[in-house]
Length: 225
Picture 1 (tube, one colour):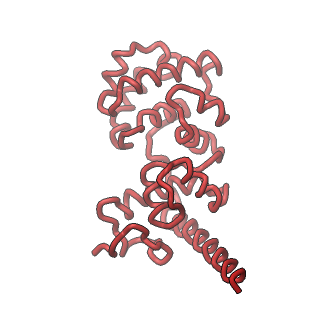
Picture 2 (cartoon, helix red, strand yellow):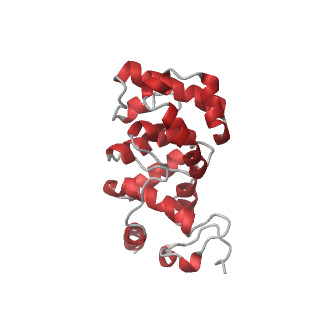
Picture 3 (cartoon, rainbow, N blue to C red):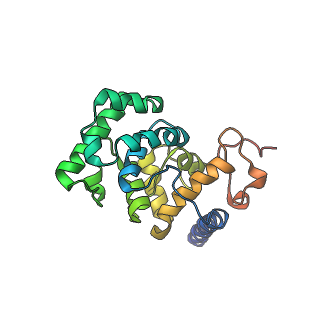
């Protein structure tokens, strides 16, 4: 009996996850990357800048940045102080400038100015962690190597009961175990859009949420008005 109940519980949870994925796809059939970019190079730069910074702020900074540094070679030759002045408002600008120049130099010297399409090679570039590598591979190249876990994905995945972890790497492993690989790229984008439009951190619009029927709202004491 216990074994049958356990099996039914697993089946029910699998169906719930399927419903979550389907409802997100219905609500956000087109969910582009929130960081404005026109090339893989621009995307990796924008993603590095997005650490501890809002995408909106990054999108305000990058137009001038990309005009001045159009290629990895141009960025590799950048003056550190001039670069810092442009990206100052994104926070941690000294470290980010150092990482951007280091990343660009590595791309020029090791990969002839073209970003590698390999996770292990990307994460060895200065300033590039697994999240940034997943963003670039998924969004720029359509290669699903994992699930991007930003603050929205972290928070909403916990609310939905898809994970109990606060560690981004563990959250990614938990999501990869239950989300079909073909959905990894779009699932992250859709959850990010959902976090901005409906599942807002300070005041979630639960009555308007398409996931209301399958969301246990873990951590929410009551249904918001």
